[in-house]
Image (tube, rainbow, N blue to C red; front, top):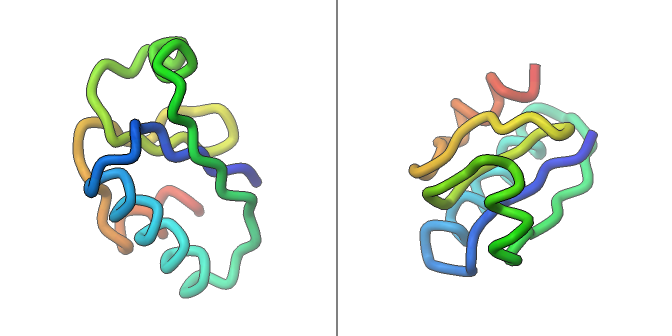
Length: 76
């Protein structure tokens, strides 16, 4: 499983990354977490507002910080 955090490094992007790590830890799942900061790659996903979370190539949430519980649901 691959989780991508899309964003330019703002505090919300960092919080989303922390939530993703915590959700993985709590769910017991394994995944690679990658930060994507390049605007062309972010736009390539069709995302116009960050932060966003992409799991295995599918945009799951954008424009807000997904909670730990929301991310755990996305991982199922």
